[in-house]
Length: 401
Ligand SMILES: Cc1cc2nc3c(=O)[nH]c(=O)nc-3n(C[C@H](O)[C@H](O)[C@H](O)COP(=O)(O)OP(=O)(O)OC[C@H]3O[C@@H](n4cnc5c(N)ncnc54)[C@H](O)[C@@H]3O)c2cc1C
Image (cartoon, rainbow, N blue to C red; front, side, top):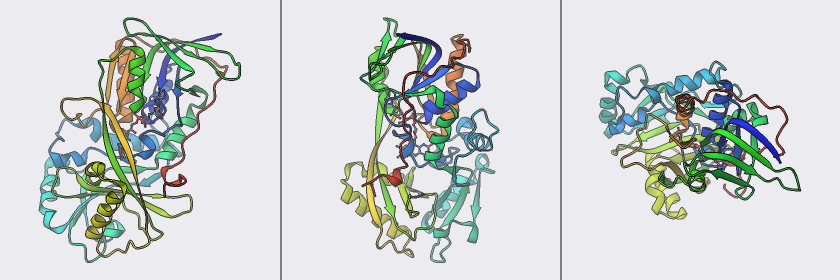
């Protein structure tokens, strides 16, 4: 049996695990990542890819002047996209440099009050005429439009880029061939992996383990005996609409509630046709609706919001997905990712794609608090395990559209 010492083993190849792997390797840690499925195939490739600075929380009054962690995220990601950050995101496709927020005429004063506050100035600007996104330039549109500091990313190229940078440290496992050996103090002593085809078994001795498996953290926590740590799943029922004439739109529509009434992002299928991916309140309240009714509600919403557009001939489908988060009495504070230490394990949920850099920073801070510095000599010989596939973009999956 081959044995291997390493500083850190990360479980889960979504944005949390992949960003953290890149971050820790940059700091000099010997780290490897284990993935049971396809990279990105949890929440990350189903997300809307908005790297937001927390502006939408202004609607519910949660955003306060101290919410700097999330406020700093768009600039942090911009630096990484230019190759200036500790994680190199050159090669990731930016779908839009800005995200927008709009309201219909009757609600315009509400949005103005929110965004008029001193704290938000500089991070948001009202836009008119041709500076507005195409669907909101129509003369029949009477509301107000704000441009946010946020960017929107193509999540597939994001996952691919992060994975390629650390290809030699990312491995595919299955729930059946991987066993965690934990002691009574919930310290992970070893990760034992059997290989198929009579290959050599592997025993990995990590100094620390990062649980970044999204909804899969539940089973891992049980394996380690950390049954006190609770996780919550927040279901969403998203809608996808494909139509050859759809103009690009990346925007939240503000209604009367504290959450965006609808959030729209635009993506391109392999056949070149655009898709609008619809979330926000529509996806939250749509959990109880079946797919047919959810599509009817989405059609009604879009006809009401864009009476000057013609969606006839569009192809529609819906997608159910859970957001995995730590269980909290109240809502998770929107401005920080979640990372906590137990045994020698770090349990994490970024809670937002945008907060991945904040999560990775919390992980390295926890390691340092526990005096786990980069110590293990780097190993060169690859492990007898395969590199996991990167899952295809949502819009290209057979049968989904
Ligand atoms: C519909 C939707 C839209 C969203 N939109 C946005 C947005 O626009 N902006 C934003 O900031 N956030 C958004 N989010 C939130 C964001 O997507 C998530 O917070 C983030 O992607 C979570 O990443 P993760 O790596 O923790 O989990 P995941 O992406 O779920 O990845 C977990 C990975 O772990 C793997 N895994 C599971 N079990 C195991 C195991 N035992 N061992 C090894 N690997 C395992 C899975 O296969 C998966 O690859 C959205 C979420 C949803 C659902």
